[in-house]
Image (tube, rainbow, N blue to C red; front, side, top):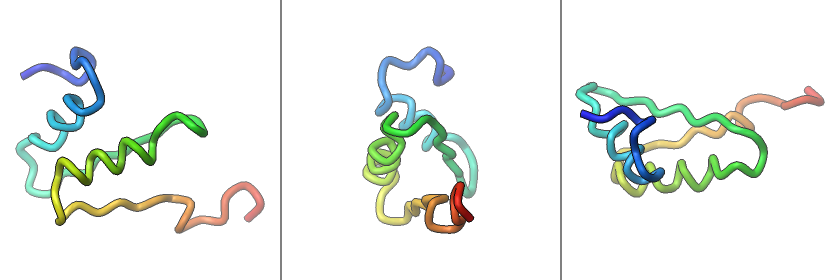
Amino acid sequence: MRTPVETRDAREALQLALAAPLSFPVLAIDGRSGSGKTELARLAVELAGPAARVLHLEDVYRGWAG
């Protein structure tokens, strides 16, 4: 099995992550503003199917002003 570093694109990296032999896989996405985190999360849900859930941290904390 190849590591994510050896993958060619985001879709292939997500497929590898979602194929991990875990009973409840968790995929954490981090990056700068505008780096494509939300789009990557949408792609992960598309690949994982209807049981996938996305938690945006902006929904659970106040951010810099809180």
